[in-house]
Length: 240
Image 1 (tube, helix red, strand yellow):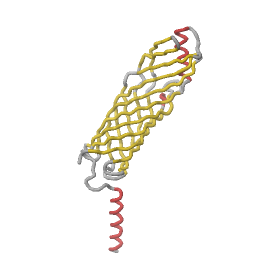
Image 2: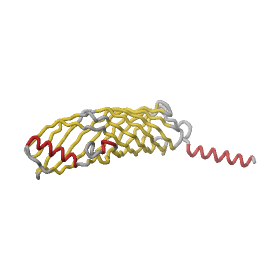
Image 3: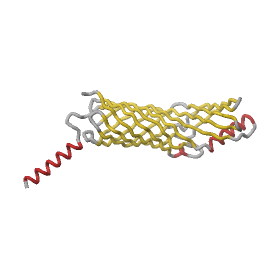
Image 4: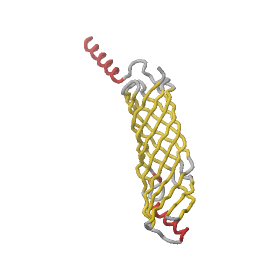
């Protein structure tokens, strides 16, 4: 019986040792720099045919954080996404603007890129900071800068449309998980819901077609809502 209990205790110790970092490997007082690939999956009006028109976006994210304790970190973040677009409604908008200015209907074939750059701060709570595999919860906020670039053929002529909007407030929230490959390196996977409040964002769109240059006030009429999917690596330093 004693041998059985000793064997069970040994198995438990070995299991805990395999899933737990060595003593002294807590994160309090350490910094982490994280680089991630970024996928944006549009939601709601942002993906709508007659509003945001956004398709799946691709980009990257960078974080720098400081661990106030083994469980809690505060940091700053930057992310960039370039979304494709469903162009039918955009083409109709250009046709209407050209007609209003030039009193003629033009055939328009457009390719539109929507870009979103977010600068912010975040808090992160690690649920099991001493485990090699550690889930966490994250909440952030900041400012999102939205811009739109369109290239088109207008009756055989090359045309461009550009609009850069004022920065607007955003929030994000979601779960993540990191796997500590070593004391100083962790692999990260994260999914967050992001909402940039661009519904009232305004800009002066500049449309150039041949020898014509037109300027037109433009409003987005939709928030930028999407799921952000991130995968990358964190590098820990300091605090020793």
